[in-house]
Image 1 (cartoon, one colour):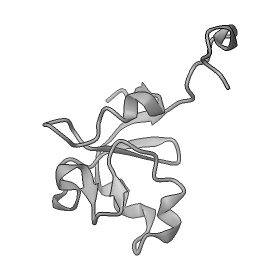
Image 2 (cartoon, rainbow, N blue to C red):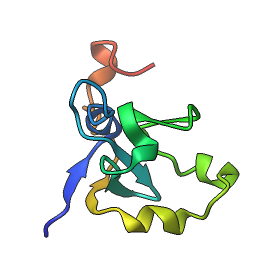
Image 3 (cartoon, helix red, strand yellow):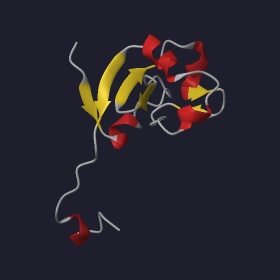
Image 4 (tube, one colour):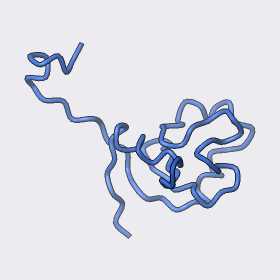
Length: 93
C-alpha cells in the first residue's frame, strides 16, 4: 500500500469527529486509530486528540509507542509548504 503524504493541516481533518476517521502521527508516520475503542469520538482518555502529532506527548504515555504499530500506517507527515512570498499576504509572522 502506498502511504499518502499529509501536512499538519491535513492531518487535523482526521480528528475522529462527525464520522471522520481518527488519524494520529508519531515520528513522521500517520496511523489510523479509528478501530480502537479508546479513540472513540477522536479523543483518547480525555488526554489526546486525533488529528494531531503525538510525537512529544508519547513520552508521558503509560505505554510504549509500539502500541501505535498495531494500527495501519496510512501516511507520512510532511512540513507545510510556505510560499516564498507568504509574508506579503500575512501568511507568515
